[in-house]
Image (cartoon, rainbow, N blue to C red; front, side, top):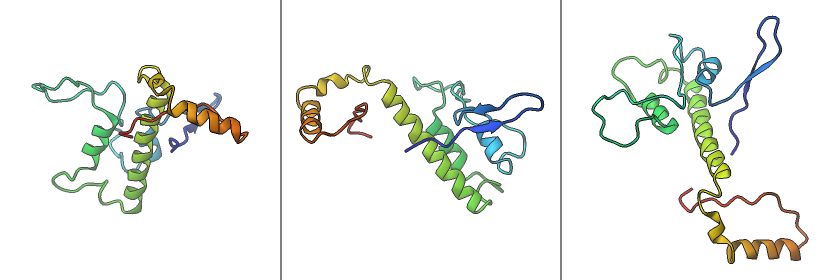
Length: 146
């Protein structure tokens, strides 16, 4: 599952610049009708607002942000009233979250101790690729919880 493509911006008199889907301006630029008050979206440095929070995590995860944003609030919600645009926003949020998770797994194979699979699973895959003359790319092992 791939992340949504980056947005290309052409500032006046400047060259093209790409904005990553993880940038806090990505959602407001993609969905200006859903962010009418010029607010930013999730970013990696976003902290919990609760002051007496006892949990170890002080940063808001991307999943927590979208869960909060999608939760039904009291009163009128421009997000929940936007029909098919709301559905597209949900799908894009899901794809961004899953893309971030897969990117993390791809970048942290050594930290996740993937080498422990050597001897069983990896050897079997390499043997099958060799016997069937299959060209394999970089092997990424996903944990069973994914």
